[in-house]
Length: 283
Image (tube, rainbow, N blue to C red; front, side, top):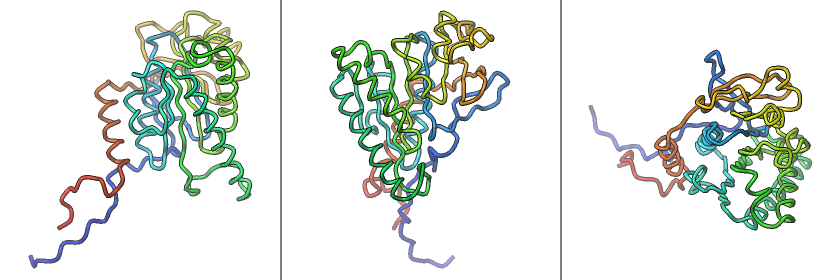
C-alpha cells in the first residue's frame, strides 16, 4: 500500500445519537412487549409505597435524557442519592433547600414563557426537533418533601403553585416534567395537579383509594388497582397513558453500577469537543 497523509480528525463526537423526540423505552408489559412513551410532549407522575420501583423508572428516564442530544436536566431530590449520579451533568440539582427549589422553578417558568413568545413569533404551537432549542427535562423525586415538609407553609404552597404552572406550560415547549412521591394522598397530588400529567404510573399501593389518587377516580373499582401488586414484585406498576386504559408494566431496572456507568459516559460525551481525550485518530 502506498503511504498517504493521515486525514485530520473529523471532530464528530462519539455518542449514541438519541433524541428526546424519539419514544423512550421504560420497560415491558405483562405480555413481555416493550413499552415506549412519548415523553417530549407529556408529563409523567409516578407514585407508590417505598421500595415499589419508582426510582427505577426515574433513573431510566434520567439516563435516557442524559444520553440524548441537546437535552438538559433539572433535578430535585431531597434524598440526594436517587438522582445524585446525574448531578454533574444537570443544569440544576436541588437538594434539601426549598429556597433553591423555588428559585429554580421561577426561572423555569421564565424560560417557558420566553419559548412561547418565540413560538408565537414563528407562528407555531409546539416545539419541533428542527427548531434547535434544547429539551429541558425536570425530574422531581419525593415531591412531598418540597410541598409539605421543607420550608414554611407559604413556601410549600408556592412550590406547588409554581410546579402546577410548569406542568401546565412545559408540555408544548420542550420542557416535560417527571414527578414521583411515596405519599399518594390528596394533599400531595390534588386532582387539579394529577390531571395535568398525561402519563401516570401507580406502583404498589396499600389501598384502593391510594391507587385511585394516582390513576384517577374509579379505576380501582374496575379492577385496575395497584394494591394487588405483590410487595416483592418491585418495578411492577399500572401505567395510564392519555385517553387509554391502565395496563400492567414492569419498569426497566438499572443497578447502581449501571447508573453510574451511564452517568460517567454521559458526562464524557457532554464535554466540550476540544476537551475530549485524543483517541489517536489524527496524526
